[in-house]
Image 1: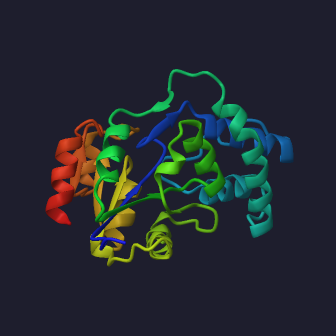
Image 2 (image 1 turned 180 degrees about the vertical axis):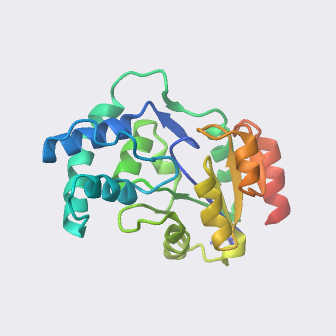
Image 3 (image 1 turned 30 degrees about the horizontal axis):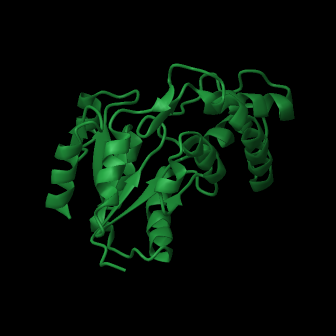
Length: 232
């Protein structure tokens, strides 16, 4: 295997794809099925957070203790509903601009390993990305199944990358995401970050969060690849 000099980790929602709120609808359906509560996610912050944290917040708001078992049961119910929600036609259920081009450009770099760093439950990530035939593009990842705080996902991603044969220091890791929390988790571990303004947050917010690079979209593939080459 070629020597890996850099790991690039992608967020999913708002960075690679947008699902027309299929995830939120699927989770609402799970809470309704298990607890009889409608619109359980109303008022709950979602952007950049782990599914584990979101589920825990809703359970507490209902007066339920977010135990490992209660989170697992809700996760499993959510994963039953998510494929149906992803199949619902919606204009915002799509791959975001530039994603295919960036992944293609990274795929020909034998010194770069490409993975995921996402708050989605792992199977939820597979369902969402599989809907667009993108799941196969990522060799490893860190997911929101067992961790509440997004910061905990960076070391998890490094461990997963090492198992896949890509072992680097955290200074050689780049996190690409669309929220300040994506940038925060990278900065917390002294990794680098790219903010992409294709989600809820504009360039100014991502720059204020101290992203190392801010892009309007991933359509600026050449700029991203030049920057990755400089910091590798």
